[in-house]
Image (cartoon, rainbow, N blue to C red):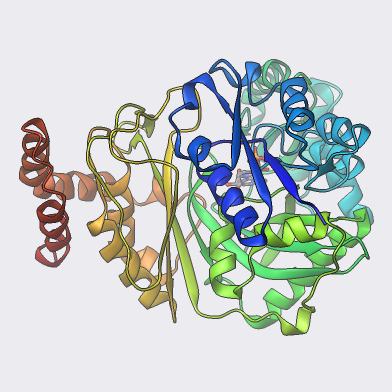
Length: 490
Ligand code: ADP
């Protein structure tokens, strides 16, 4: 059994993993950059060491430094979290060579899944439906033109080594193709070090539905149901929920089985996600995320399974304790990503110093965060402040809890997307579960509704700031006043 785990990550996910270590009676080792020396996770860790300057390339992405810290601290395993080195096959291999357990799939699986074209090809062999598109990377403009003509416009160009929605370009007609191809290839080359690009049919306003899987060393693989992650901006998720309103039991069973088959085909071990797009009753494989996902808590809330602890147990060689038949989906959970970003200005990041901070609580509410009052969100990394998760016996209760929790949340000093989430939770189509990846673009009144809401909150926001200037942080009064806005606004 693993005894000591180095967490090669930062922020809320580092804290999430350290908490799991503590519950399992294991020692956690944190690594942090100079910019994170005051971060909560660096203080929470049983042991911690600084591994370099703020830029991730000189700290969190520096394999030698991370492995060096693991060796020095005597950690017998590394948990990579998400992002940074989490899906880096070379890093997993370097861990394997040092006989440090990498908590994740093997380097072979990471390599295969990291190359989206190879993964797509493998999935076709496994009988998993993929969107019409190129068999491999396109060899040049003529090849791309031929494929696009065959599958029909619009098409989407994607970097083979891509992630985070970076570089993907939608092409509506042939005369846009050449320019789009050149630009995608250039972004792919610069960002991922590989200019390979492939073409897929672009689906109009599909739903993003993904399945959480767990696989042990004995080859047992189960799925923990789905998450719907259709509320996105710039192809990046903002709100996730489980279960999806788009699936009935039959489709859930079918997609879940396909996800398990896909994982079995590649010999998947650990926690992972098989992502699909769902359009007009048909589903298509998107990619496998070979790591824990940001949105994993919604699955934990409806299944009662602690995914991070399962990852650690699997890496320790323990078999899965649950069979597919024993897994039940109980109620509904929704997650809002609370980011330091301006929803009225194209969601631009707004890092800076948090002044007042009051976290919501109460029945069914879970907050995953690594911030506190007077904490400065550094500009070098993702500007996520927290993940707010609401569970309810059904979707209606989960939404009601999320709404009231959003109105309990006080964050001053930096702009946040709280108003965006409050607005979406009141949106009639969201409430009905009518979602799609273009939800934000198509809900044309969202900005107007957000503005109106901010206007209503303005006197209070000013009051909060005044209180804080005078160093009278009347947190309780502030929380009460904001929470009442929810009732007054109805
Ligand atoms: P990344 O790995 O860069 O995040 P994905 O392939 O996972 O990219 O896709 C991210 C998002 O981009 C999807 O959730 C969806 O909104 C959009 N997308 C990707 N492929 C398509 C497609 N063929 N048609 C329509 N939308 C797509």
